[in-house]
Length: 104
Image 1 (cartoon, rainbow, N blue to C red):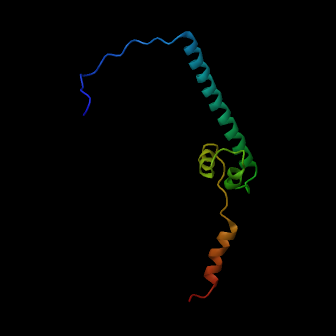
Image 2 (image 1 turned 90 degrees about the vertical axis):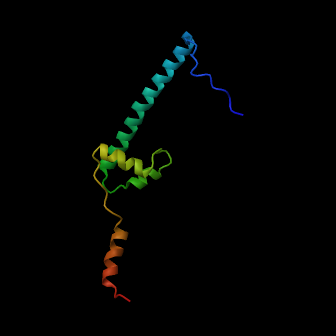
Image 3 (image 1 turned 135 degrees about the horizontal axis):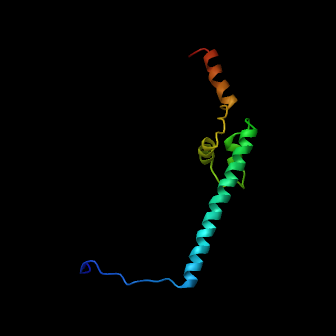
């Protein structure tokens, strides 16, 4: 049986304690620090990718200490103007060999 609905009920007024406000402020500060350090870490990775154009995004993403996926690093790379990587040369050569082989 559904609960009866008596319309919108007024909410009681709430005033957080000073301790609660301090805790919330500490959390907000931590979030701000996280954002700043995340951007700094991403910039450092992008600087390394800019310095070594042969280093693939996948290799950076595969490192156990890097918390971002290859796709995320590519998105961040666009923000920091990291040049695109060359396609896998082994895969690129596969296509050229297919042209040389006689068709069945």
